[in-house]
Image (tube, rainbow, N blue to C red; front, side, top):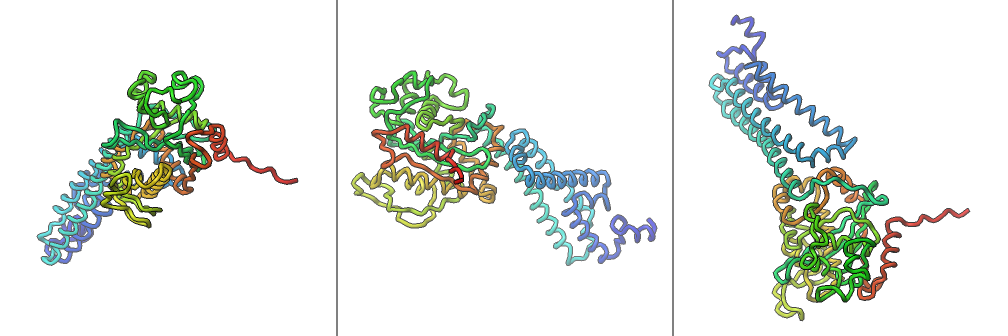
Length: 453
């Protein structure tokens, strides 16, 4: 190559005798490889490999830019893609391939640099900088592939493949069950039961707390449970205590044939019986349920890094009913709790009433919701994904996840109001179900006062 050609193309045809030229060239190639992968090969190496790398890089940039634009204009589209198993599989494969491509391009760039021709003082710096960039970029792409795989596995293990259901009178209603299958229990019983009503447009949410000791529970006309108990769930039940939280256990153990298709639909006979009970109590049509295992959710709280709780009273971690033999207390005031302490705070019975426990459980639920920030989920995603299948069971379909993630964002901004059907308004031993239905209706569809003429 003539000296004129070398001087006109110093990147491809450098003066290898000049350490200054080769050092500058080395830094340029390394920087180009970082910011525009493939460009180093186009300018100084295998142009076919470089064009392929550039094409992949530009495609990735276009996808990222398009995703950002769509996220701000139509966020539900991005949520749908991010919660679709096929899209997550494609993302996992493409990110893994891009990580491999970037490793190849970086190693080839180091070959093109020809470090032995650069100044001795710059050789280590160039090599170290290229290696750090290699680990950072390829590692990020590789980690993204791992996250995509974990997300896909979590989604398919928790959510069903059933079609989504429409909103009822402008609301999606969720039955939230806090399952307590502790060592002092015979089987699992819903220790806390709530109905969460979320406005399908605004995301405004209201939680209706149903005391576990409600009796004489009505069921919707024509339902399986109304056929079994036409006069309500009263003293004629098949268990020792005929109250709300015993419905699950009774149906699971003694009448599972009432709901033969429950398991195929991602549910359980006991859950379907509880759904019908909640519908009979509130007068709402409940589309979906969410069952949270009270013992397993301690793992989820630990995966989130703990929660912040403002304890209203002193709560014993152990001991007897008369508060003797207590070795540890949860003291009043603001404090950071790990999963085990949060579990005991929500579950402790001694020294408080059932309604105190309901209030503490609602407090823990709201604290967990506050911890589910984008940054926290991304940084702890692996732990959260690992804990979630053991904590949550639901019949929310995969195809509706994008919509509900977007709706949950609106709910988090507005907060959640709650109404507890507890004394003195509602006496669980003599419940006024007409009043409960009236309270639900007034909360969800408040009457707007007519303007005074």
